[in-house]
Amino acid sequence: MKKILMLLFAMVMVFGTQGGALAITFNLDSCSVDLSDTQDPGLALYWNAAPPQSTELEVGDSWEIDLGIIGTNETWANWDDIFWKEIFISFEFSAPEQVSDGIEGRSRGRWLVQDGVVEWGGPMDFHFGDTGLFVITMMDTPHFPLPGSSTVGAIIEYVRADTQTNPVSPVPEPASVLLLGSGLMGAGAFLVRRKKGALSA
Image 1 (tube, helix red, strand yellow):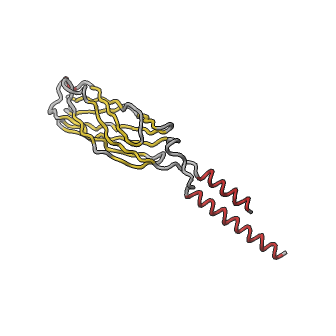
Image 2 (tube, rainbow, N blue to C red):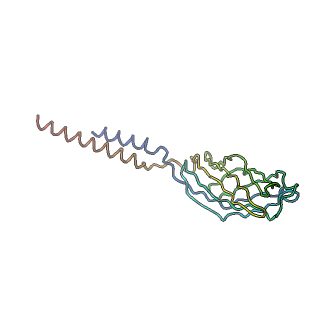
């Protein structure tokens, strides 16, 4: 009987702790946009960053976040405003510490409809620690009027934990505790039947 209980407990510890990595805190202290290429000639833009933000994520979780406001004070899109201009957004995280350049984008004015447009490049991988990884996907900014502005948003996805700073949690998951309890109940029922069988003999 002891062997059965030990086997059940071992199974719970092996299978129940897989994927049980602890949540980590994401602290986005600031993000800035390089608009040096967007001044005249070109649609002149401004950027107002959102205040610092923080949340906790487990592997597989996503965080949709407003990064700030981008816009223009220009009242009319001239011919020189319709050409694409390069912009660049960079992120400063205090947790987790990450290494990446940021994400490229572009902007321009549209003469026929008299509005501004901002587009961003594809998702960017942000690595931290030895094996940690999260991905930031920028959401294209809707067209904004002249003058006017629009909110810049992004989705942060926690893809992989850092095995050095965030090891797998040794605490069994609820489903594993249920598995252990079911196993103990089954073992108890087996002992009761066995005892009754011995008495009847």
